[in-house]
Amino acid sequence: MTSVDASIAGAAGATSTDAAVVAGLLPDGLVVVDAEQRIALANAEALRILECDGADVVGRPVVQGLPLTDKDGRDWWAHTDPWNDTSSHSGHRETLLVAPRGHEVLVTARYVRSDETGVVEQVLLGLRDAEARQRAERDQASVLSTVAHELRAPLTSVTGFTSSLLRRWDRFSDEQKRLMIETIEADATRLTRLITELLDISRLDSDSLNLRLGPVDLLGLLRTHMVRYELGRTAGAVQLRLGDRARRDGLPQMWADTDRLEQIFFNLIENALTHGGGGVTVTLDVGDELDGSPESVVVFVDDEGEGIPVGDREKIFGRFWHGPSNASTGLGLYVVRGLVEAHGGSVLVDDNTAGGARFVVRLPAGLPAVLDG
Ligand SMILES: Nc1ncnc2c1ncn2[C@@H]1O[C@H](COP(=O)(O)OP(=O)(O)O)[C@@H](O)[C@H]1O
Ligand SMILES: [Mg+2]
Image 1 (spheres, rainbow, N blue to C red):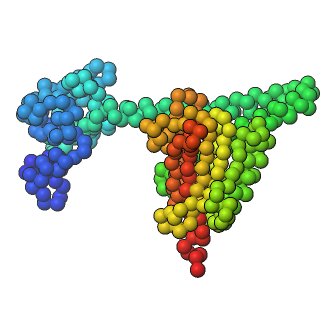
Image 2: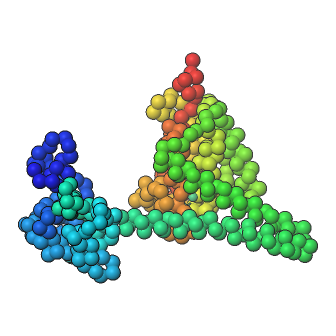
Image 3: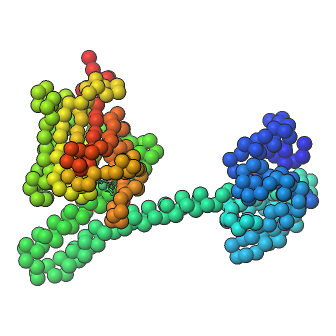
């Protein structure tokens, strides 16, 4: 067994065949260069990344079979010269290098030294396709800039108005002052909401969202909401209705997290007003049996906008997915779905008879199983 087989196989007593099999199964590319500076092994993923055949590279001197250039255009093998390395370096951390066919590869190098002399006998290279990683980084960067932009916009009014008020307090009329303070309050609320959403996303993603469950009066909660809308916007923009079954039988008791429910419906109503256009109708009704719960409450949020194309109906619930408007973050519906599902419910989007969008939220009702009976 050569030392690379030993290093792949470890101390488990595996054979070199096992080592080759393991190398073939590795999700990352692996290239082994021997003491003669020839390529001894290249696994399937390495060949895929380098777009070449095993026959083209195995057995060839590494400088020919796998020439690598760093970002300054230097020949990486000549520059690092592992076989004449007299330090005790164990290799190189992940570096972005350019491979033969011009594509970028993330390369990690590990030196295997002789126990006695410390001379580098083998170089193991880990290879990763840089493209997927770079795409992910670009996505992340654009998300960060959207979020930063969203956070800064309301702050501009908060800092601008507070400094005007502080400097020129006496020069403003009471009415002007009130208007500025109202704007500051609205923007501070927007900031808080945005930050709550960001925190929720990280909790949803890490499965650490905790619900504070208690009895909830959903109708009362939405009514309070409506009052806020009536105050803040044109009266009558949002209507609250009870469906037929709810009017006949009354709504079942719900056991849920009040703040989260408020967040869910705030987001849906806000979307209906901004993306939907026209009036918004929120209908509460008794729902059918839901997985694990004999009773449920169903809420329809209908608007009079254009509706949502069938092809986008799942996408809109994606993280950071938003329509053509650059001003939005696309966080809302991702959080909505996460919160609804955390309650054991479901949310989907459909058309309504007026052609607008209809969001349907189903939430389990009744007492939780532990308290039942
Ligand atoms: N009621 C609606 N009518 C039409 N399009 C909608 C509606 N609600 C959401 N959308 C679309 O779904 C996208 C995602 O919504 P959301 O996650 O709340 O993000 P945001 O509101 O920040 O854009 C919106 O950008 C919009 O394109
Ligand atoms: Mg939204």
